[in-house]
Amino acid sequence: MSFGIATEQHKLRYLFLQDQPPSSLLEVGCGKGRFLHRMHKKGWSVSGIEIDRQALEYIKKKYQLKKIFQSLKEAHFPNESFDWIVLSHVIEHLLDPITELKEVFQTSKT
Image (cartoon, rainbow, N blue to C red; front, side, top):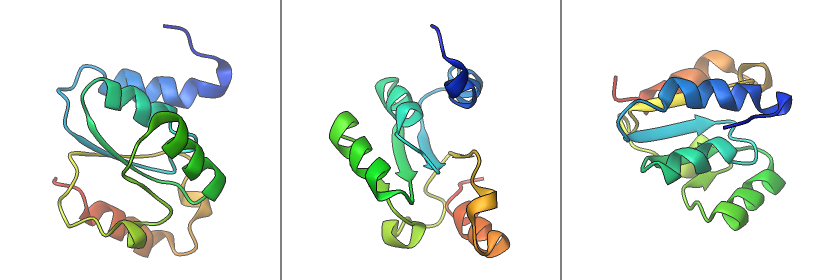
C-alpha cells in the first residue's frame, strides 16, 4: 500500500484502525471521503460530517456513501451511536469547540 504525502493523516488513521474488528465509525471533517471509503470496503459501518458542500457531494457521488452530512445537527445521530470517532484538523474550524465537541462525543458508545 502506498500513500502520498498529502494523505499522511489518512495513512495514520487507517493504520491505527486496520486491525480492529469492523464496527461503527464517525469521521468529523471527512474531506473527500477516502478514509471512510477504505473503512467501508473493510466492512465498517461509516458515517461522516463534512461542512464543505462540494466535498460532501463528491463523496456521495464517487463512493456512494449515504450517511454523509453537512452538520451533526442535520445528521440527528442518537447518543451512543458510534464505536469510533475520528477528527483530524477540525477543532480550529469550530466556532464553539467545547460545545461542539461535547455534542460529537455524545454520539460515542464509550
